[in-house]
Length: 82
Image (tube, rainbow, N blue to C red; front, top):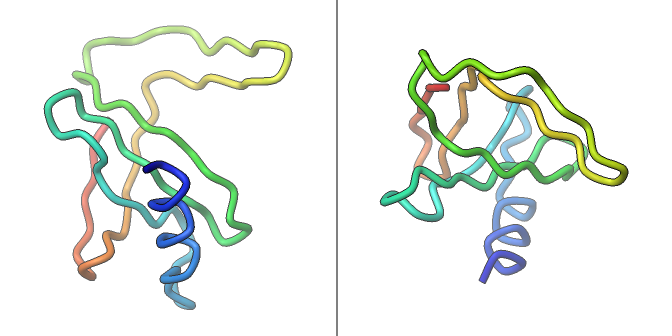
């Protein structure tokens, strides 16, 4: 499922997009999948702005918390949040 969603996002990435292009995968938990202009995937989890945490970096996975994001959706609209 996620790989198919990833391939769809990469295949539909708008040429004028300079940020993240993605879609919400699970609205009940606020899970988003997005790609950038280099087809680099990002999983984004929606949180409340008050949920501030320090960033952590694992050996092979980097995690950034409390980042403001604006994502261009596949239907041409945009969405933003934390």
